[in-house]
Length: 203
Image 1: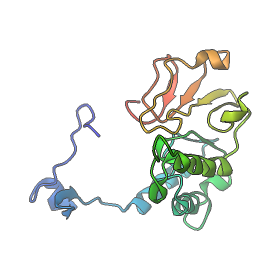
Image 2 (image 1 turned 90 degrees about the vertical axis):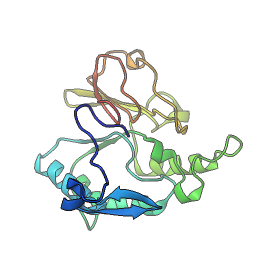
Image 3 (image 1 turned 60 degrees about the vertical axis):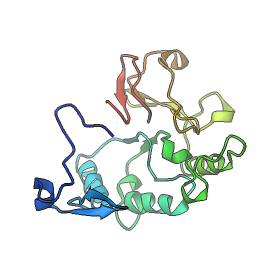
Image 4 (image 1 turned 120 degrees about the horizontal axis):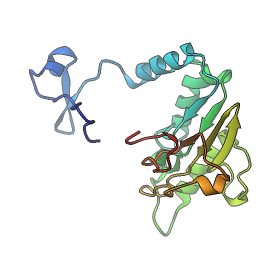
């Protein structure tokens, strides 16, 4: 991931400021940064901030798990959001969108091959088992993408990868919804639709 405008990733150099503050280590022969929090602790703290703000709903723009075909990843997600490590989603509605990791088989085959897409089918089936979305008018793509009107806000979620690691959403989704949405949630690069966008990338 490239540096954001005006913000550079700290150097993993021995003696550099980050190394003196948090430390560095070597992973597969490459110096890497040590982070001040573990991934678990970082997730717990982020979810606590969300909970403290009393949201009406939580919008996830993909990558809920690191490999949708890997059940321990889903177990970890729900342990942090509706289990022993946190319960935010037990009282707050969630609006999820597909990310590329939800289509990835993880230890069970990655994205498969052009001849065998079973890892993707299995991975996406787990997402479908956990999340029900409103009808989108296309039974073959039920729960892949949808529109939801939540109070005064209309949200469109996109399946921006369709089980392909490099697929991107269409340029303008407004026609499918019949009116300009108040928000679009997708995992790929942002759309040039003049709407409020949420997602990974330059948002």
